[in-house]
Length: 615
Image: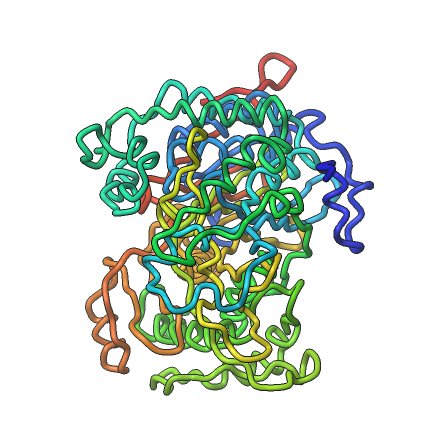
């Protein structure tokens, strides 16, 4: 099958990429005399954190925010060399496979939301994994999650390589080989094991397969520790093959053959993978229209189906819009019990809808318009009381606002677990990227492709493991993409993008992105404050509310008094960038929960010209 990358993008009749201008032709400096001072709470995007670099006579700059400082350096270097946001995002994605292999890599997939400054288009690229052609609705049923998720039957057809290459071919300026070069260097020379990798290196998944243990454990079988040098020569060789031969070697060549062989491993009879060489050769990416709606005069654009992330997050925002959130005089300041309570109730309602109505829209009807319709949202929001906790809510019925009723009532599907990694980028020209990549569970299946050094995903466990009755929105089916919670998001004011954000964290992604958005728009926090602030999360209509440390005890007592059951935990890891629309300055915020880092590249004036500089 031909892998002409641009032709793969012709999957949406509503988007004409042929008219997309070439990006990155040259820098576009900020005005000679930008307004004095930094962003304020009344500016279009509220406030951004102080930049770590690019001081002095700085011009418009590029900024990246990502989970690891080495990956941040990779992205900043690409920008400093004249690359655009898409170039930097792709290079960081490959670098993260080296420095954070437990969360991301070419054995998985992801989603990307892109704003192109010159054309004004905002697009969503879907490179989510797919179920193989031989998949059946009940193939994940009847076995413990620990067995299913570490067997080949849970491996989806990986989309990362083709997705990243497609984005680069369509909108980037670097070659695929150029974006792979930093990752090759890191894999060959080695990287220090980060605290995040070390904290999770003792997982049983690093010891299930000999190839995985050989990379991520010491010779005596002990887990790697922070500061150990992690060298990955097989992964470097794999990247070199892709750099030399393009995606075809991954989907039709020697790497494809190795993937098919590796996913035949199983923890039980019948747990062997069903992927074939034809499945890999037939894999395609999809260009989609983002889910877009307004909130308090701002516009939110996020990932649509097969991700539930954008739709669920925006639905919660719309349900909460009637409350005076941010008004301290009315008890709705940040972290107040009343604020947290209505947020929890909104999450419970939206996750009830998510479980029933959301899946891969290429296979099942997803009533996106109905779920965001003002009358439907108003009816759901009316169920939220400021002073009482509602009984466990059921899913609503958005179909009268969207389309015909299914033949039989749908039932909730399984919740999603796992981890991912997210990075956000803005370049000197105003192109913006929000991208999340994943292999699902930490360490994926635990299966490393022998001789090629990358882990395989267990993404098919995001389907209903036990088939649900019709319409079976998230049941397994051949070539179907499992429902996701990934929510790469862009925020706009009067049509201009001013922030990009996203998070890892399974279903908690939705609530992490929600709260950082509200911290910016409702509470007037700086970008770093918005990311650092403690979070809450509930991802089902019932159950416990996860609460991070940092809230006032009085607020927690107030929630408990309303009947909310609380448990402590860590939620998400949002990496975000922000543009001050008044003067074009760029800011970044990395989430300390996973050692997030910011990298910057500036256009500085030297004599009569502006040059790229990396701090």
